[in-house]
Amino acid sequence: TQEVSPLGKTACKISCPYPAGVEGRPELPMSNPRGVAGHQQGKAGRSMGEYLTQLIDGEVKTITKAGTMDDFRYVRRTELEAWGPFDAGQGTNVPEALRDSSTLWRFPWPQEDGQAVEGIDREMFTTLGFRVPQGLLTKVDHRTICVHVKPKGYGGGVNVFLPCPAGPDGKSLSLSNPGASPCANIYGERWDEEGKCRTIFRCGWCGAPFSVPAEELEEIRDAIRSREPHSGRDTRSWYAKVAERLQPRPPSPPDLPREVD
Image (cartoon, rainbow, N blue to C red; front, side, top):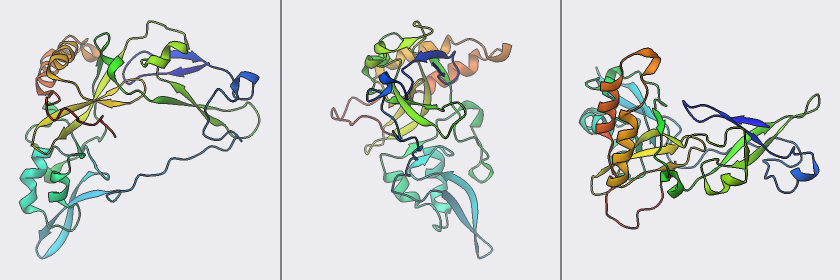
């Protein structure tokens, strides 16, 4: 039995066969069936760190970190557009990042309005979790969830991969809370080649990214507006601002590929 928790929501326990047991092989996919934990390779593409630079007194200086590879969740796209003419060109390739429709940009959180790029000091993984309207997550291309299991008193462990509780294969799981709420969180923004913005969300359980058309976005907006106040504070006006900034997936092109990290 392992506990799995979505971001900002109540956890539930999932029961699965123990890897060393009869039922654990070959049904359970594992990172290393021989007991040596695997590791994830970094994807190719841009450099690991994306930095904005500026020429000051004849010297190129790093101003701030913009992102990692094609993940630019330190800065909004509009902020990088405004910064572009001032960049020294010795770090991030700003024009390339703006042209690339796969670039993931920071969501425009209301409390960050008006901040200067030079003074950015942000948490890259800022997000907001919320209940998802029933049935919305059935359209998401869910992923497996990795749970690390270690034997007691001997050697290393293995990663066991389980279906997402919110996905179609989740029905095969034994859950401590079968009624666990379907939930999601805000991931960032992407802009297509026509300059249209769409909000990227993630499944709160498995992290699968997705975007939604206008009609479904209204349901998500309502879910965020009705979210419970945080830590006893009146956060309703902030939730309302966040909801209004969500952008739908454009109706074209119709063959828009599924969202990726």
